[in-house]
Image (cartoon, rainbow, N blue to C red; front, side, top):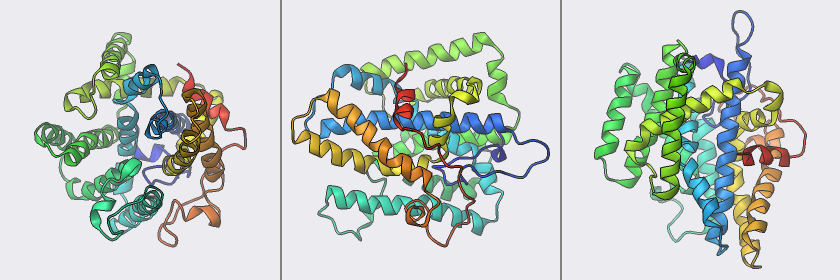
Length: 357
């Protein structure tokens, strides 16, 4: 589908927005759809946390909002994992030392740094040196999983990726340990993205040429979304095909969106590491304050979303500056070209984009 050199993004530690050398014109549309889709997934995650965090502070949120977010559960983070996997072949083409340096600097460093901040805010009775504090901690679990997958990938690079996906899926059915099961579940999407990138024959595009196939996939994804809204289907291995169907439909939709309408979404996608790591502490502070004052949900939810975006958007714009860069990249270790800065426009427009049905 999309060769690894045709993307630009972010949370997976790839050079965000960095141009690549290639013969002929750069494959801009494909870069844009990846940034757009990643941006949508990140904003949906922020919207989920904007409804979940208030409940931790005694603010009652309507069941319908919870159900809508639960309906999106089988697609949000699996989509991010899939997009990260699309970039794996490019990463593995680098010398091993360069590859590992990049993952330490751009994945493990921000993970550990923001875990320490998270622990400082939430408090813990366990000594900070204890390893269990750093295993998929809190909202940062995605970065932990991603870092583990990047460490495993060189070890299985000689194994057919389709076989890796199959083994991971089968293992997810038989492993009962919650953390190990969840890691296996998400590894399927990560290595599936790698498999799609390795094929290089636009398998998703070929699926999209048949309206009947797209309609069938959309129906499967919709059925899974409805089921997830009423039944707890978190990390259920049987739902993987339905999640994949939704991812394919989302990719096809993102590829059809006009560039003029996706600039802010692409900006979020290019700097997704910033939005992912920095939003939650902001929401926690605001929710604590609002919860202590008995604020209703219709004040708390938009307040958390706007506050998070108001902080993360400037951080994304200035992430290459010395005062900010160390928060998302280990100083002196990785060589990363400057990011494409988000437009200096009001953040609420980005929030509105995710709120549209």
